[in-house]
Length: 124
Ligand SMILES: [Zn+2]
Image (tube, rainbow, N blue to C red; front, side, top):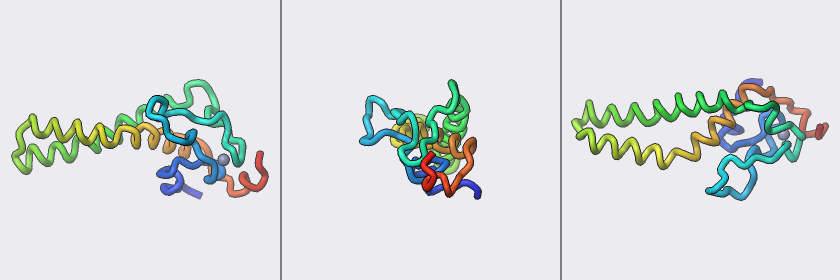
């Protein structure tokens, strides 16, 4: 069925694409608070210990490029000073921190677990 970017963006369960991957409401002190299982299809949100280790690499790669490219363009093309470029890099990192943190987990889980359109109906 392929990846659903809408499902990843909205942090939906990769199996049923209906349940939420993260506990609501969002808590700043615990941004990675996940329910034990999906409330719709009962997919385990931590299938095995260390499951989200790979998400760390996705987060690192995505946020690295997302911060590096605009900063390099400003410094090398528009002749911004290194300090201004660093300021922009920090601002981008601060703004996108939670999006990359959770988004990389969502993407990782969607890569590892296949979509089952009947999972929501079966409920198990
Ligand atoms: Zn589900």
